[in-house]
Length: 278
Image (cartoon, rainbow, N blue to C red; front, side, top):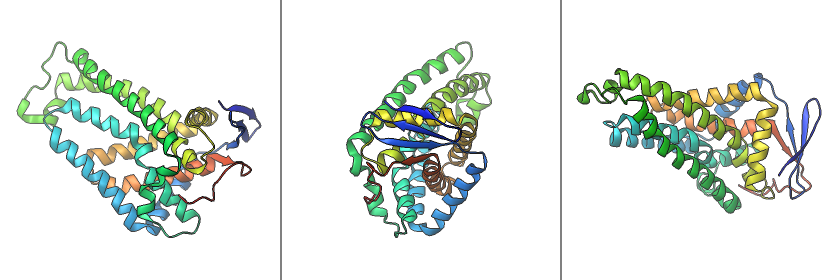
């Protein structure tokens, strides 16, 4: 578990393994800088960026095609995408790291970057999986309560739009939005730096990484809240455009998140292994 020593602009953290990690205070202007750097990474790695963007686009399209007559399921899976996006962006973190070292982007190597710390990353994926499973159980309960005294869809043939314009749909959306915001906010706090840190430094365990992630968010509450809203807003744009915008949104946010990590965290090179290839 990380211990913290604070100063006005930096915070010293010490993990159970003796790792020294420094977190830094940031400002709202960093958000624009992260997005700008992410955009530049897209320009320097167009093929890799297009690959990851297309994978996400087709994933969204596949979900909509399979469940377009099941609005509750669509909203549930949309939230899944938001919750597991830190894990889905692992390859993009690797590409951005390669570019920052002056290397040519290697798509194949980025796809297997998780293998350099596979145990801890797998454990984090398991944590996200448990949260997703719990949310999958909760969502039908929200729907049952919100639509208890109304028809689920006024006009079944209208599909998703019929649901959204019905009283039942509006009741569900309000309840769903409130609870989904709370759950995704929690996921954000424990994941904002977790995967990048596990890729960057194999001396840090997943529990320490999640605790550190939470501490970093608490140190920069307002800015990180704005960053979370930026991430969530752009991901939702990608989803409501049936994945088309994901071609740009997914790589942009993946790269930007790596740059956010580097502005938030500095690892003491005495124990780190940052020069190992991703």
